[in-house]
Each structure stands twice: as structure tokens, then as C-alpha cells.
Image (cartoon, rainbow, N blue to C red):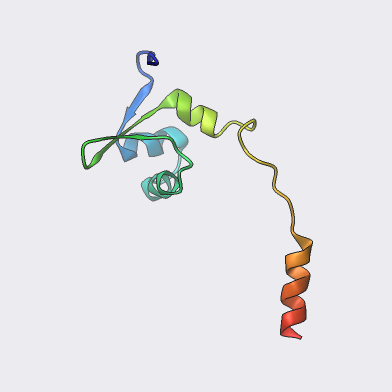
Length: 80
């Protein structure tokens, strides 16, 4: 069981959105995509830890983006 520092919890989508400095819809989108780690407390209340959100947005966690040149070529060939 992990312990939580005082003030580490964010209650509700609005608090999460304020913390990541994005609109509430963006917070819901990121939650739905599984980018933001949250816990549901009942049917409508969501809770997140600031430390977990910071870890989710850290550069160590993000996979490197790779350009897929082959797919662009294939699409061009199909249209010709």
C-alpha cells in the first residue's frame, strides 16, 4: 500500500484540468485514453495523485515518436 503526501490528491476533473493547465474536456480526453492515471470513487467522482500525473507527463515515460515514411509512400501510390 502506498502512502500519499498531504495535498497530493486532486478531487474531480476540474481540479485535474487546473493542475495540468488544460480545459476540462482535455482532461476527460486524456483520462479516457488512459494517459492520466485516475481512481474512480463511486460512479461519478474521480481522484488523481499529483505525483502520478507528474510521472505520466515526465519525459522518461514517453516513447520516442518515429516517422513512418513507408506508410506515406503507400498512401501516395494508392492514389496514383
